[in-house]
Image (cartoon, rainbow, N blue to C red; front, side, top):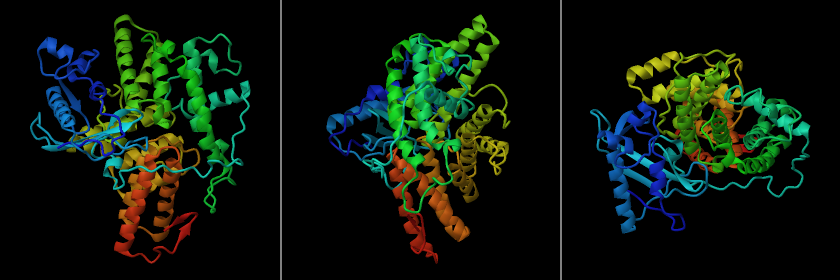
Length: 519
């Protein structure tokens, strides 16, 4: 069974783009070769006369490309018949998806589940895959809603920005303080990181510097050092100036991003470490602004470049600094891919780093990568692997000793592996802590945590339910101004609260208000 667009103004499904977005096959990945993802077999498997398969980590099975080819042919037949379909939710745009197909599988290995779902969501002029466990697909409100910012058209909230070397260097410092510790891909010896930026920057240096500026603009409004205790959420429902600036800084980020894109071709011309850094900077920026690019394709490109550079380093040798940078970039690719995969229930195919799990608080990048390795093992493993991942979890960061972004990653990992209301509590506490950095994935975890809290309403102290639900609504409302899909999650959460209030009938139902949240 398949479906076609529920809205006639949506573009036709680009099956070629979907095919190109498929993961590399197992043989090409094992041989570290570029996979052309052709159907029913890639070129390398055709030459070797072997079956072309890839690992679907989301379902933990091996899938033959010939099966995917049959699905593609099936969709093309349906398109020819002009069959109507139901919309699926986009992850980062208010437009509906073009395809939400539920198909019966032909298991390729014994013991697989005989039925599973494929979801392709239309986002940023291309189609993205959403797993059946994705919050957006499990949410009752599949249609996202545009939420007008309360600051649109208000002249009293504006950002005063006068470009100067000091202001620009402040953005560099913000990036190095907040993002470099968890994604250590910037070479600290680069000359453009200083206060006095040379005037003779190369295209790739200009590209990298403007991408750093852009990412910093997304991070800086929520930075703890920029917050004022007087400028927190007000009972009137209006945010403080720093939250208004969050929206205004997005405009500034877009300007820096556009400047970087003027040099993107020169920055990605050759498969070098600088090129890999440029691609990863685009991927990090897409975590905050998913419409700026297809983050899945960016990570796939970074993975191919990393394979090439690592193979070359093994054959020809490299300096210790070069080896360390490649290691950091491998770690970054794995972390970003699995952060997306765990949230949207997608497969993740980039290999784990070859070192042991490390939960050293003084090394946040390794700590966070180890968390995503646990998520990867838990999602793709059997019962034994899941239990081992559960036992490997580090303790909760109750004293807030970790960097905010690592602390959120820790508590969401615990929520994934042990989805209890106590785990949800720590997620909702972490996301509203000072210095918390939100990406477009954060609302999905907040929604998961919020639903667990509401579903366990009778077992949680009333005041805690009220506070945690308020935290959830707070984050989802803020996020909906940046990522429209968050509005659908917020609406679904409100529906669930209404339903369970009518079921359990707590004493406080519809009698309490915290800020603008009526409970």
